[in-house]
Every structure is written in C-alpha cells, then in structure tokens.
Image (cartoon, rainbow, N blue to C red):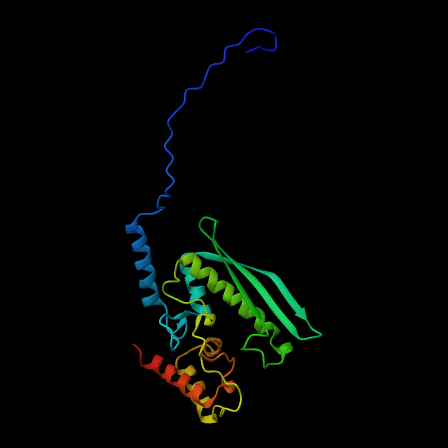
Length: 242
C-alpha cells in the first residue's frame, strides 16, 4: 500500500473471529420468577381488591372488568406515576360533536423508566351518550377517555389482562338496552338502588360506572324496570359475599 510519503506500507489483516449469534431472545426473568409475580398479583387482587369497587362482574362475561378505583390501586402498589396527555380533541360547538383521544403514560417511581402507555377514546356518538344533550356531557366524555386510557395502561404494565377485561367495549353485543317504549324503573326500585349502594359504602361514581358497563346508561333514572331489577340483584349479591 502506498503511503502519504510515497513509501510502502504493509497491510496487516485483522484476524477473523468466530462469533456465535443467538437469534432466539432469552428470557429477562426465569419461569419461576414469572410464576411468582403472577401468583403475587392474583393474591393481591383476591385479598386487597373489592368486587363492586375495584372491579365488577358482568353477566355474560367470564372475566371481571377493571374499574377506575382498582386501576388506581394497582398503580399505587406497583409504584407507577401517571402522566395524562390529550392527543386529539374534536369540539364542534355548532354541530354538537365532541370526541377525545387520551394517552396515559405510566412511569416507575423507582427507576424513572416508562412502563406502559394506554390509549382511550370517547365521543358523544357512542350508545351511552347519543340520546343526551351533547353540550352537557363534554366533561364526562373527557373523563371517560382518561379512564379508558388509564385502564389500558395499567393492564399492560401489570400484565393483568389475564385477570380483567379492559372495559365495557369488551362485553357481549347483546347487552339489553333501553331503546324506548320499555317501562322505566319504578321509584321503589330507584330507592332500593340508592339504599343498597349506600349500605355497600360504594361511591356513586363506581355505581354509575357499573351501570354504564352493564346497560350503557349513566344514571339509574335511565334504567328500564327489567334492568333495574337485574342491577338490584347484583348489588344484593355483593352484600352477602364474605
């Protein structure tokens, strides 16, 4: 090889090395550790989370659905901080069309690393809101989108999707809904719902969330007589459970 000064230089070859490349990814933790984590999560859910408050059992679905209080409890026990970002919003005040897309990012308080992201959307064309005054549910739509994003992120970060469903979007499509013309819930039924919710020390927003998941209504006064009867039975079952 000719150098800059015109002299000859020897090219010394680099000795080739045999490098083994393993294309099969290795496990970050052992199978024993993975099983222990799953067992601890299941034990926490069984001993520390309450049906009707942290999660709800919905007829026709084999897994309970995770509610917002339960998602927040899992965030606390796993040491996650929540970061909420509205990534898209539609607010058409002239035509009454509102929609929100929200992203929730969970960050480990211990390491500072992101653990998971969740996306939640909500709009006033959904079945739960389509017959309501669009201008009166704007705040509810945003809260619902945030809640859905939170639950999505928590299920991903805690690997709890085997224990819970995401939300009422996962429910069977034949959930009975009040299409009009059906007898509304009676005053006696509404009083029974209010009294039972109070006796269970259930927060009103949790009862509201359960009604949204089961019947896609956001208030007990919108239940039919049949739906109210079914909801009362479910509440009474919560009272007799140990």
